Every structure is written in C-alpha cells, then in structure tokens.
Length: 215
Ligand SMILES: N[C@@H](CCC(=O)N[C@@H](CS)C(=O)NCC(=O)O)C(=O)O
Image (tube, rainbow, N blue to C red; front, side, top):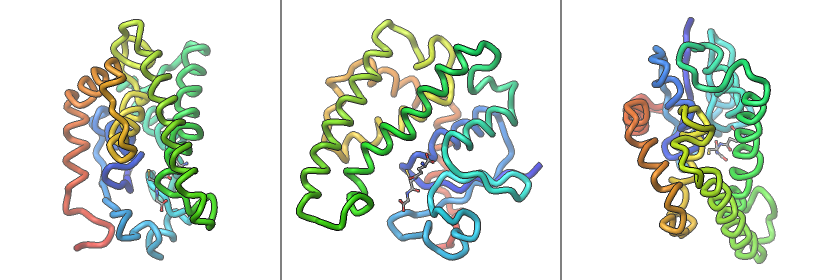
C-alpha cells in the first residue's frame, strides 16, 4: 500500500501527521506552504480541487477533509487504536467531537484568518474577527470543561486523534492574541500532546525539505 500525506505546517493537518506517526506508518509527507499559495497550484488542484490540506492519497486515491482522513488512518492501522472502536456510544462521542472541531471550531477560526471567505466588504472584517475571537474563547472554555474532571485525554484515559486535533487550536491561540493561561487544563493537555514521540516526529515533517514545490 502506498500512502502520501499532503500537509502544511501549523495547519489542521497536524492530527493526520501525528496519527500516521503513532501508527508507525510508512508514508510520504509532502509539505505545502499555504502563504505561498501552494494549495492553489494546478498540480495540487489536480489532486484535490478544493485546494485544502490535509489530503491522504491511498494507493492513488485522494481523500480530503480531516474527519475522512483521520477515519481512514484509524481504519488502516487498527492496532494503533487511534479512535474508539466497538462501543457505539464511545464511537459516536468521538465523532461528535471531531465534527465539532471541523465544522464548529475550525470555522470559527476561519472568520478570523480568512474573512475574505465570508464577505468582500472589508469594513465588517474587524467585527468578524472580534466575533471569531469570542467564539474561540468559548471553544477553549468548552475544551477546558471537558478536561476538568482530571482526565489525561479528551476522550478519557486513552489518547486519540481528537487530542492532536485539539492541539491545532491551541497552536492558533497566539494569532488570536488569546492567553491560554486562562485554560490551565488545556495547557497541561498541550504538554502531554507535545511530549509524545509521534508529535515530535510530526513536527519534524513541518520543516522538512520535501515540498510540493521545491524551494
Ligand atoms: N473542512 C476541511 C478544512 C481544511 C482547511 O481549511 N485546511 C486549511 C489549513 S488549516 C487550508 O488548507 N487552507 C488553505 C486555504 O484556505 O487556502 C477539513 O476539515 O479538512
């Protein structure tokens, strides 16, 4: 089986990188530089016409959208136990969280980072950005509340792909000028995510020379 992950540093492709590393997968990691517009290059749009990361290509078939990518990684490597399996309620709870990350939290942040997606009227961008910051604060508070019972990981005592996914939003806080010291359990969770060897290997890919477009 051949696996290629298209990803970008600092982006929501982090959990896919961590998942492949947790599983000990052999894969080709191809880095896009979003500020350079790599995602809009014809050679990338030919792979994924939506022009976003992450994309996982499995034996020549490209899969986009985080939830699909993370599900594929989990199913390819069941021994790594990257997402709950079996118990219906645990599986549903996991997907409830992943879906909120993808369609709630990420979209809230996009109003800050990509206001042009929502309106060309630049006069309302400051208001959009301010409501994004409020919505992100609410998201951080919800994550904090989930960890408040002392659990190590978002779904309980076992690490899952929800953890590096949440860490994406932790990494975005400085851009929002949100002080995460207001969320101590989320800060401690971030340290646990960063301590995993899979995270450290994932971060190495973020600076690798293997780019879609060689520099
Ligand atoms: N709904 C998609 C969103 C993917 C997405 O927006 N990724 C960002 C990086 S975090 C991206 O590729 N941005 C490039 C752009 O907007 O041009 C998912 O969950 O995978």
